Length: 359
Image 1: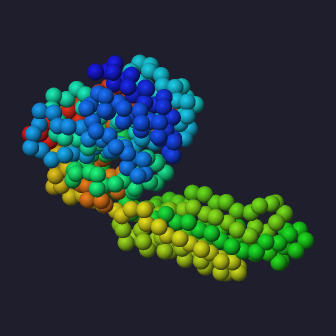
Image 2: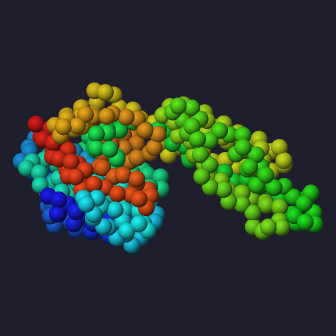
Image 3: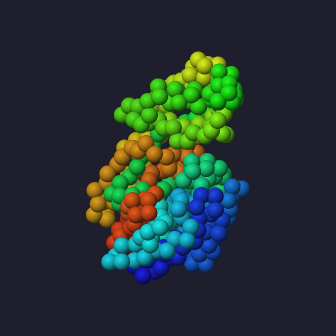
C-alpha cells in the first residue's frame, strides 16, 4: 500500500493549487477518479468537484459524503516533496500541501483497496483556506448523502464535532486629507481613528470560547499627507452564536465611536460566514466515526474547535458531518510534514469506517 499511497500523494502536491488556482488540480483528480474508481465527476457552478463512486459489495445503504478541500495556503507553488526515513516534507522553501492533499490521497487509497463500501459522494472544494468559500457555494442539490466525513483534521484519534460562528468584519474609515507639514490642522486622520478603536477592543481570546482579531489595516497614500481613508479586515469567532453577534457589534461600536470622536465616519459591515454547530454525543455520524476509530485501535477524542472547516458549512446545509484526522503536522508552515505510517493508519480508519457503514 505504501508505495502507491506515497507516489499518488507526491504527485498531488506537485500540482500547484493555492487558493483560487485549483482548476488544474481538480481536473487531475476528476480524471484520476474516473479512470481508477469508475466515478462520475461533475463540477458545480463555482468549480467544486463532485464525484460519485458506485457501491462495492454493499447494497441497500444510503450514500455517504466524504469531503476534502483542494486548495493550499501560500507559499504553495513549485512544491518538491522529499521522503526521508518514513517522513514526507517539502524541500523547505514551501509548505508541503498535506493539508488537505494527504486526506485526498488517503481517501483515494482507501477506496482503491477496500473490499466493500457504500455509494460514496466525494466533494473537493475550492478556496477553503480563504474562508470556506467553495463550501459556501457548494451545490448541495447535487448531493444525496445526509451523513458526511470531512478529512481535514490533524491527530488521527480526533473527531471534531463542533465549531464556531464566524463574523467577517470589514471597516472603512473616512477622514479628511490635508498637507501634514503645511496645514495638518485641516486634516482628520483615518489612521488615528482606526488605531484608537483597535486599542480599545479586546483581541485574542475574548472569553473561553470567543476570539477576535484584526488581520489587516491599509491606509494613507503618502508620508506627508494626513490619511483620508483606512480599510480594516477583522473577524470574530465564538462557539456561542449570541456571543459572536454581541461582540461583533461591540467591535462595530468601537470603530463608530472612535471615528465620530474626531469627525471621521466609519462604515462597518458585518457578514456572518457561518453559524456555530455542536453535534450531540448520540449523533449517528459521531457514533459511526467512534466505532471506526475503535476498530483501528484508537481511543476517540471528540472535541470542539474555534477554527472554521467545511464541516461548519455542511452541517448548516443539512449534511450531518464530523471532521476526522489525516495525520498532518505543522500545517500552514514550511515545516509541514506527515509520517507515512500515519497515512497508512488513516487508510485503515477509512476501511473500518466502510465496514461499519456496510454492516
